[in-house]
Length: 449
Image 1 (tube, one colour):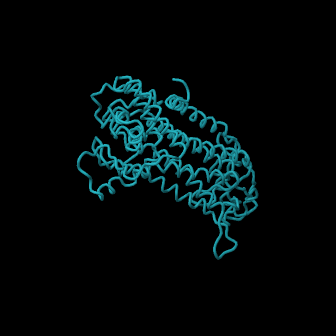
Image 2 (tube, helix red, strand yellow):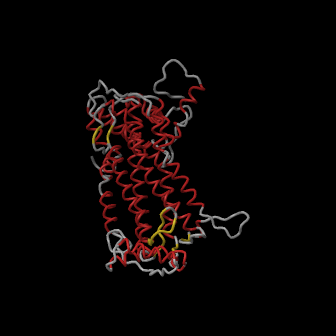
Image 3 (cartoon, helix red, strand yellow):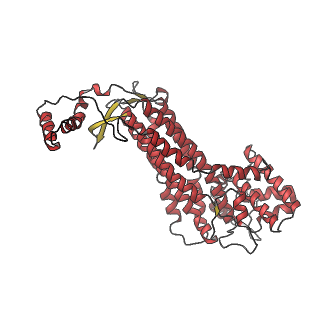
C-alpha cells in the first residue's frame, strides 16, 4: 500500500519517486521513536486547544505508546511504498483506529515534524557521545597517572627536542577532550530548542501552544521565530557536526602518535597483540591497522561540517528538498564516532609503555636545555649557558643528566590532572539530560503526569 501525505489525484512517476525518496526510509529508522514522542506531545497539545476530544487523545496516546514499544522491540519497519516514518506512523494509527488516526497532523507539517525528530534524535545521540567521551577521558587520565614518571622524548619538527613524559602525553589528549566537551555542550544547547509548531515554516492559524509541547518534550525553550525554526535545519546539524569533528581531530592525532610510537624505529609503546593484524607474506609483522583506520575515519568525520555547509549554504529561507540529504551523512556519524572511541579506549587501556626509552643514546641531547637551565639557575647568564652547552655538544663533551625537576603547573612534575578532571566534570555537569528523560517517561506513561 502506497501512502504519501501530500498525494491527491495525480500519481507521481516511479523514477521521480525513487530519485526523490532516495535513502529516506532507511535514514528515517533512526528517527522512528522520536517521531512517536513528538506525536505524543503534539496530540496532548491538540486536545488542550480543542482539536481532539479527551477520548480521542486517550486512544491515540495508547496506540502511539504501542508503536513506540514495537520500535523498541525491533518490530517496526517503514513499508515499501510508504514515503517516510511520518507517513508510516499515521498509516498505522489509521489502520488500527480508523479516522481518528488522520487527526494527528492538524497544525503540523512534515517540515516541523522532521525538525523535531532530528532535534530529539540529536539530543539523545549527544548524550551517548558524551558517555563514550567520558570513558576515554577516564582511561587517558588513569594511564597518565600510571606512567607519570616515565620519561619519553618530546619532538618539534619531528626532531628530538626536550624531555616529555607519558604522563604528559596521555593527559594532553584527556585535556583536549575536555575542550572538545565544551564545544559539544554548546552544540547541545543550540539543539535543545523546540521547533514544533512552526508548521511549514510560517506558523499555523490554529492556536497552538508551543510552550506546552516544549515542556512535554523536555526542551529548554521553543525556537521562537517560526521562520528561524525552519532555517535551523542544516545549521543545527552543522554546529553539532563541528563538535563531532573536533572530537575526531583529537582522536585522529592520538591515532597518528600511536602508529608512529608503535613502529620499530620509535618503540615507545606496544599495542596489544589482539588489536594488531599481520602480513600475508611477512610473518613478523604486527600492523596497527586499527589506528590507521581510526585516523582515516577521523579525517572523514572532520569533513562532516563541510558537507553540511555545502548542502545548505546556497539556500534562501524556507524549506527545500536539498535538506533531506543532510540525514544521510549526519545521522550515521554518531554510530561511527562512538565506534571509533570504543576501539581507541580499548587500545589505550591495554597499551604497554616502554619504560627504558632513554637508555638509547640517540636521546641524550634532549637534556641539553635542562643543562642550560641548571647553569642559569646557578647564576650564569642564560645566553652564556646556552653557548657553553652548544659548544660542548659540538665538541662531543656533553654528558646528559637524565633527570628533570619540573614543578610548574602542567609540566612533567606537576601534571595538574586533578584540575583537568575538574574542568571536564564541570562541563559534564551542565548537560541537563535528566529533564528530557523525565519528560519522556511522562509521555510514555512510565510515571504519573
